[in-house]
Length: 443
Ligand code: IFM
Image (cartoon, rainbow, N blue to C red; front, side, top):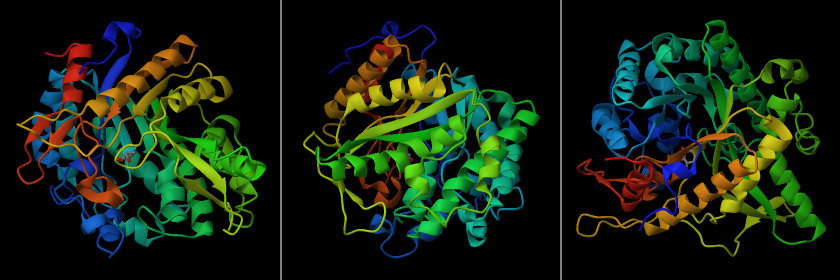
């Protein structure tokens, strides 16, 4: 099965890439990395399926050359990876030279294969020592993050094609401090409100530090989920508006309008950090590009019995991925055009993650993941439509290059274009990888 598009259906300078994240693939037990709050979270019963951790993961720490060879052979233009804060600063204070050496080798190896390195500075591996100090609840996290960012950029910033501060601030904060699903597993409105502000302040301070050092092409990666009212009832419609507020509007409105949505500030009343308004100027410093991660929509219903935001997600009618996520490519089109129209204007947008988990099976050494091919195909059609309608979308990264550690769901959910046998670490490109190779001109 092949894609319905060719590279020539996209603008000449359009970038095709694949994305990964440090904790999900590297192997956190190698190279002097310190414990991150994901290690402690996973060591606590009930948090992660089978208590799995990123200790070995895909052993990318040792196998990055082989993985980059694969990317090149697929005809991709870019590799999106993250540096691990806990690897670079194991105790949150001191630098681990071995950790920086690894990213130095990775940067060179990426370039040697003609791939553009897209760096994300934080994809969730906060050093446990900083979590002990309150992590994202502590305002000081902004200066800790700026220091860490400068240390990484001093070493590899000269070779990066593009740099994002933080991956998916919504997951770093709401999902992790209000819903308790990701590390540190808090279910606390005050922790949520504070972290939702501090993560943006950390982004701002890192941007300032990197700009001052002369680095360019800096951005942030936000995730978006279409908020679909479960019915036309007024209660469901306003519940979906609250969902849209805390998921989709909070971060982009702070960055582009210096404000937070009223509909969410009302719910956070009394919990926001004092004087937070004074930080909005710094938070809204211009981006060079915006990263957009998109996977699905949520069908949102009012739940008047529940505490604010008094809503719940209910199952919808569309076909679903192995995560139970509805497949809804129109949502990607909707966000790309909405962001361009309402928020970011001509600032380049890059789809930094999009993909699906599927219960893949190796049959005679092959994985025929035609459902994933269809997912990528329909979402790339949505990207083309958005470009045709004027959205400045400059690239698309599939999530993910490799099957990997899917956080609280462990290794059971496979998102890769390349299958990983976790016992042998053997990589097997799936049919979706071959479809990319065919469409974008790999060998
Ligand atoms: O695996 C994650 C990734 O770390 C962040 N974005 C969503 C992916 C799929 O859940």
